[in-house]
Length: 269
Image (tube, rainbow, N blue to C red; front, side, top):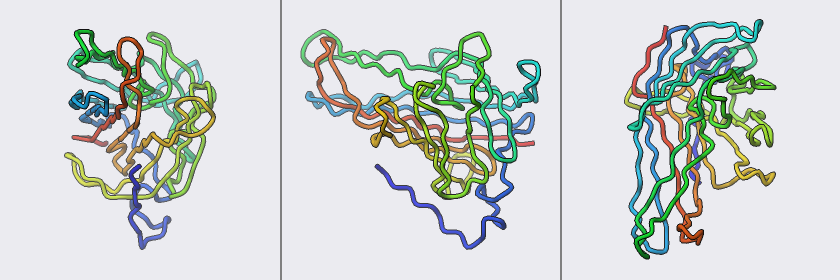
């Protein structure tokens, strides 16, 4: 697992200008827009030794729509997310409260995003090897919850997306087992991140996940969000050592799944 080192800062948190400062709030002004390139790559280690990497490219646009009251009394900020793939486009919505203590996810609306099964040619014969790529990244903004396709799903309790201030070492509970899985988040510190949209000072927020539900956090998952003054500028989600089976269910090796989204442009108001 890669080790991410935080940049040293000679400034106190109070006087800092980056996202770790005391008064930082994620920028959710109406009209704010971010565009990302998303690259999913699979690398294989199988007995045949001839599996090439498998790549998928898409783009994501996230835009703050407007404040909106939901369920009669909940004051929220509505955010639209559009995922554009070769197969078509998918739009989902998320509703937030950006309070002094934290950024809360209140509700979601839209279809969960999943990847289809892929067929790979089997060197053992004409029958293809099937590999299922369905994974927990249901949406770009909320990668561990699924929303119903045509109804507003209320998070109970609301999920803490970011806990303010984003001080190094801060850790909090994001979700519990069976709701839908146990996840914590932890701030690792600030680092300089270069993207097509520029170079940013970003706080690294790690997702710590019990993906298999065995009660222990998984050590084969490395999931990092990079949060800057300008918003989310990068997301890297890596699962290592997933099993590959053939069409008879026989284990033939392992693969790594890497889902990388990087900011390409943004507009803030």
